[in-house]
Image 1 (tube, rainbow, N blue to C red):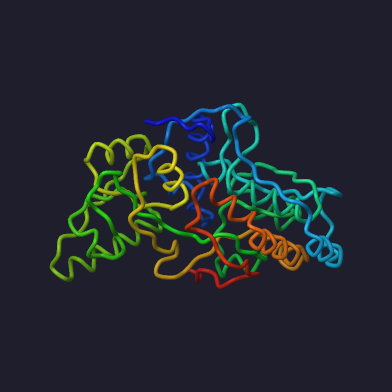
Image 2 (cartoon, helix red, strand yellow; image 1 turned 60 degrees about the vertical axis):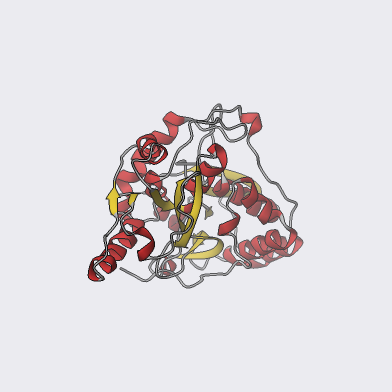
Length: 326
C-alpha cells in the first residue's frame, strides 16, 4: 500500500479513538466518525512538519459582528474549540504530534483566525461535548457534527460541509456507478453494522427482493485493514460509508475510486456544521467568517487538501433544516 507523503497518522491513537467512539456513539445519538469502519485505511506515517494547514487573516465584518454580539470567549482573546481525534481526513493525531489535524480542526482554526482570536483546540470525547458546549466549557465545536432538529433545540449551527456517504470500489473495478437499489443487486458490499449507511442498504435490499431481484450481500468487518483487504483482493465488490474517510484513502493510496454519492441522511439532505450554545450570540459571527472563507477561496483550498471538494457548500447557513427527530 502506498505511503502518504503529507498526512501521517498515528495508527495506535486512531485505533483507540475509533474504539472509544464505537462504544459511545449509539448511546448519545451523535454523528459517528466510526461509521467509517468499512472505509479503506492507509497505513501512513509522516513527520509533523509535513502536515498541511490552511490559514487566513481576520475578517473585519466577522470581528465587528463578534464585538457587537456581546459574546465573551471562555478565555479572553481565544476561541476554545472542541475537536475530536478519530480518523483522517476529519480529525486525527499525526505521528509526532499531540493535537489533531484534519478538516475539522482546520475549520476551527480558520474560524478563530477570521474572528481575530487565537485558536485554542481541546480534544473532546463524544460523550463530553454536548454538556461542555451547554455549560460554556467550550466556545465552539467543529467535529463532523450533523445538524438535527433535536440538536437545534440546544445548540446553534453554522453549516460548512455536506454530510455525504460514498460508494467506493477497487480502482480497476468495472463498476462505474452506484446510485440506486438496482445498482447493488448481487454485489458484495462492505458496510458498518448499525450505521445510517447500513439502513440505506437494507432498504434497498427490500426494494430488490420485492421486485424479484437479487439483494446485495452485506459484509461486516470490525477492522479497517481487513475490510480493505477484502475489497482489494476481490472478496468484496464495494464499500459504503462516510465519503470523507473513503475519499482521503482513495487519494492517498490510489487503490480505490468513487462510484456514487448519496446524502448522509438519505433520503433527506444533511449538513455538517459548527455548533455553539443556543442563543449566546457567537453563531452569527461564525457564519460571517465561514462565508468570507467561501468567497475568498480559502474554504475550497481546505477541501482540496483533503480531497473533499464533493462535500463543499456554496453558502453557510445558520440553523439549516436538520434531520428529523427519530
